[in-house]
Structure formats: C-alpha cells, structure tokens
Length: 186
Image (tube, rainbow, N blue to C red; front, side, top):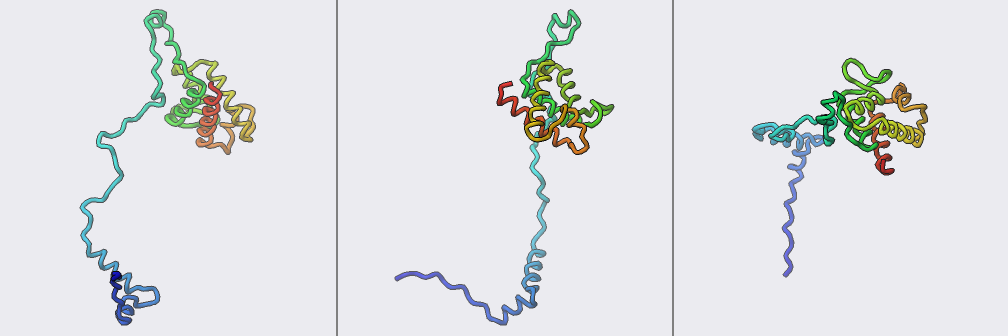
C-alpha cells in the first residue's frame, strides 16, 4: 500500500480573514513584527572579520630588494647600484608609488609628496629601481597603449595633465602598459 504525505490543514476562512485583515495583508505583517520584537536582542553586533594579529602597512616597493651600498660604494661615496627591474616591474612600481603617495596634475610633485606619472617614474628611478633605459622603455610602452586604445597624446605627461584624466585612468594605463611589457618580455 502506497503511503501518501499528510495534507496540511486548511485554515478556516474566518481565521484567514483575520490574518489578512486589509488589502495589504497588514494583519499578517503585524503578527510577524510582534514575533520579531519578542525575540531577544543579539548579544553583540557582528562586525567585519579582522585578523587578530592585525595588518601591516606594506611599502610601495614590497617584493623588491632595497638597494644596498657595497663597501666600495661607501668608500667612494657613491650611491648604491640600482636594483635591476624589468620594464613591467618599473611600471607596476610607478603605479604603486602613486597609490602610496598620491596623484597630481600640472606638476611633477608637490610639497605633500603627490606625484604625476613622470614624477612617479622619476621617484622609482631615484629610489634605485631600474635604470634610465628602463624608464625610457616604460614610456614607450605607455605611448603604445595610449595610441592602441584610441587616446593619442604627444607624451604620457600630456595625457596625465588632461582635465578629463583621473587617477584611476593613470593606474589603468600603467597596468595595461605593464601587461604589454610583460607579454613582450621587457
């Protein structure tokens, strides 16, 4: 003999009318609100998860060794040899430098430390990452991406200083140029 599932009881029409007293079902809503109000308040409000060890602010050049002066460099009082980086790494570091220090239009840098696109490339070079040839190759990649995406400019600096350019546009340009340089093995 086949078993059948028990059928739920059908509410009496008068009880149904009490629950749905009104065109918008306000009786049912009132009952649900009364039930929710009767529940105890949670012991604490859940917040976003934060690691109990906290987080560490990472420098913009994280993942790359710091330039170290050798004994000969110190004896001759010359700066340390630059850390060799690829063109793609140089462009990524420039984007991270802008993210850490702020972005600027109309000047290479200001008193607060904000920099433009050229200022970021110069700062990365001045901190000892890459060579002038790396910077030139990075600027070539920036120009290639600008022209390939239909935003012709005479230089990346002109694009940086356009009134319609935003900081996000500069980061996107640097990311695309870095990806292109990585694909080309630069």
